[in-house]
Image 1 (tube, rainbow, N blue to C red):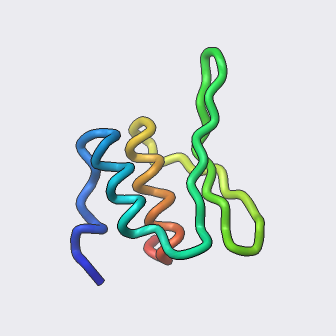
Image 2: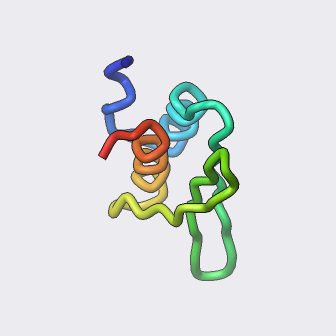
Length: 73
């Protein structure tokens, strides 16, 4: 596997580009925004949703979703 998947994203642009490269087929990352809160969800091929929390803001949430989708962690 490409070791770039393990590099933590420095910016939101990096996180989005990393997701486009490493997210497996049929997985989807959704970002929901409303006043005062946001949520990052990983949608799996079977239709389930996983609420993702990477612990350090939205870019780490996206990284965490990529890890989960690829069976890392």
